[in-house]
Length: 252
Image 1: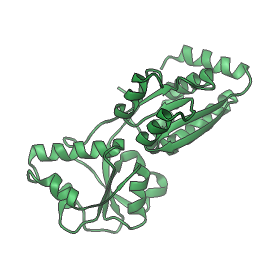
Image 2: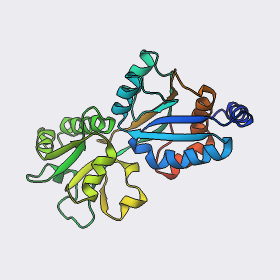
Image 3: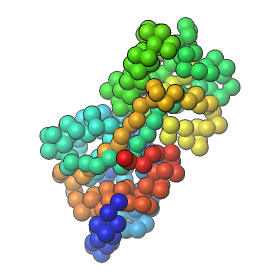
Image 4: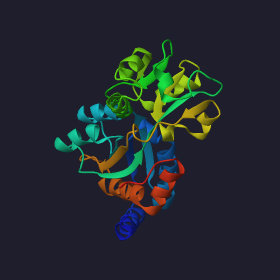
């Protein structure tokens, strides 16, 4: 976690005038980064603001000239091209996540993964371009490959999809509002505010997908020193404790 580097960065930022730090972050980070940002600002005197959305939407904004200081993505597929174009500095993985299935709390229609392919079910997932949508399709490919529920499981599952959302929080909201019988989200999206409305269907480990989250400083950052300090704070012991509190797994 580079405690010496972190301490020097925080000291340097804290001794200068407060900086404004804009962080573009994957929607699944909303709760964890909101708390983390408050703690960072309290330590440094900086003012951190966040824009949360699907990683693919944030990538497009950065490619089109949007100004930000830090980018945190839910997968390397959206992060890597920005590094390749020189728009974001090479990043580090700061957290990992896993998939889970959620259903309305009082529903009895879905009890296992097999039930998601039953005719007439309303399933919501994320769009293919969204990291969680990509992970969902990888999960389906793994199920097909195993043949546990039939080689055509993914085809039957996808026939039940009634909506493909632009970010994972919109996916979860569909179940919360009673507009879906099931949805695939990250484990961390089952937040305290959602737990009372849903029931979790665990995915077998052999089919689940490990999501890795990279973070880096945007090349045209208006406050590069403060941006680096924010990244260091996310990687620090304190930042990692906040991420674990919200269900994220430590980076490998």
